[in-house]
Amino acid sequence: MILAKTEEEIELLKLNHEIVSKTLAEVAKLIHPGITTLELDKRAEEFIRDNGAKPGFLGYNGYPNTLCTSVNSAVVHGIPKDNALRDGDIVSIDCGTYMHGFYGDSAYTFVIGEVSPEVQRLIKVTRECLELGINKAIDGLRVGDISSAVQQHAEGNGYSVVRELVGHGIGRNMHEKPEVPNYGVRGNGSKLISGMTICIEPMINMGSKQVFQERDGWTIKTVDGKPSAHFELAVVVRKNKAEQLSTFKYIDEVLKSS
Image (cartoon, rainbow, N blue to C red; front, side, top):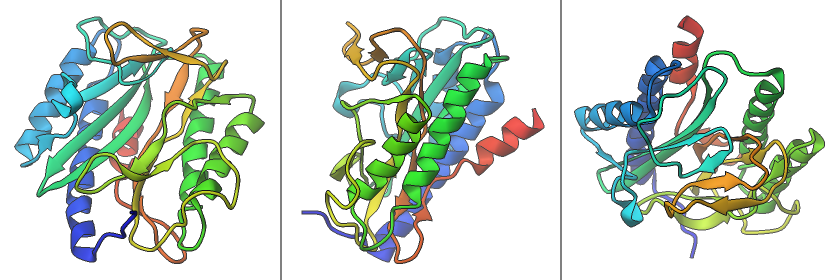
């Protein structure tokens, strides 16, 4: 059963998502050629704990780190490593928190140094997909309206949509109903009701939509080795316009000043 959250519960979700948003901004301050994703992971864990929360991913279903750091052709769930990021890479960083019995969850794709115009365009379109999906998180519409908005924009720009991984509800559990696919038919799927809290997270590939799982048991990569981008925000479904729980404003401020 899909239940709307109370306003008190939504306030606790907001606290978590404020920390998630600021954690990703802390990571943004450090991103440059030469840094390792393991160093980013260490700083993220320190920041989360310093702000009174626990890393939401660490130990979740056995996951070994605070961040998921997915480089270039890795779509999601990349495990931080001691390999240095290089000029021209992209890295999608997914972060979660746990505090007061609720979770936070958000993701952002960063560029390392200078990347090609083709990769810049993939990242731009993926973020646009997220914004279009959020615009459909309105009371009375259906999950398929979100999914369709994401898929049409991605495929209309020549990209493909990963099928095996989807967005989700969030609350006392990291992953709750409903699933929020990035593909679908307008007017189909679960009905959206005010107070429902969901994570919308387009995972858009430059080439084929086909993916596979690495031997590490976590990392999902594109079969053709082409880049993938991933953005995620959590929202509350409201009557006329979705209310964002997480935000990219702190990241944007860091990147603008760097």
